[in-house]
Amino acid sequence: MAKQTQGDELYPLDNEAALALIRRIADGDKSALATLYDETSRLLFGLVVRILGDGASAEETLLDVYTYVWKHSASHDPKHRPLQWLTTIARARALARFHWSSPDKRRQEHSPNLGPKMTVAPQAQKIARASMESLAPAQREILEWAYYSGLSCGEIAAQTGKPLGAIKTHARQGLSKLGELLDREAH
Image (cartoon, rainbow, N blue to C red):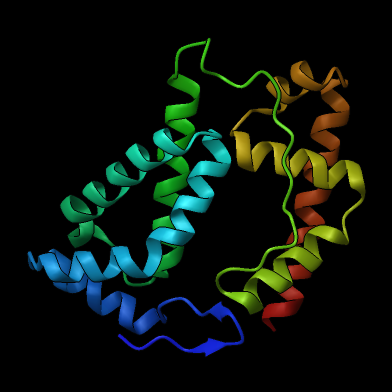
């Protein structure tokens, strides 16, 4: 699989190539799984380590993600972009591990930071970052908490000491504005 490069940034596997790999994995092709891993593991590891805050746990979770892909690739709906499918699986596995880890391992505070690095899907990442930056700071903070920690509004309120009603309002308004911005970008 040839990767396109622009400067130092690597563009991820394109949608059609990823779909072809998933079809081959569903047929039992181990080399397709290896290729998919090589092409996407950096992205997924970054997400998982961001949620878990621990490299060793992130590596174990990543193994679980690709094991799931091996076993369930036949159930992938081609209407869903492969990178979205993979990141959804990785996020869900990481959040489950985070929430079920022993209390002494759990991070007491979570302070999301999107940071300036652009490593994959630069155009989509640029749009997402710009959209997030256009939100009010409170809206952005609540949405980052929810995404990266998987906490409910009630749990975020308890962790931050802010009123539950304010958390829910910021989340609703932030999601509404993000939806409008992303719809505008798509059309």
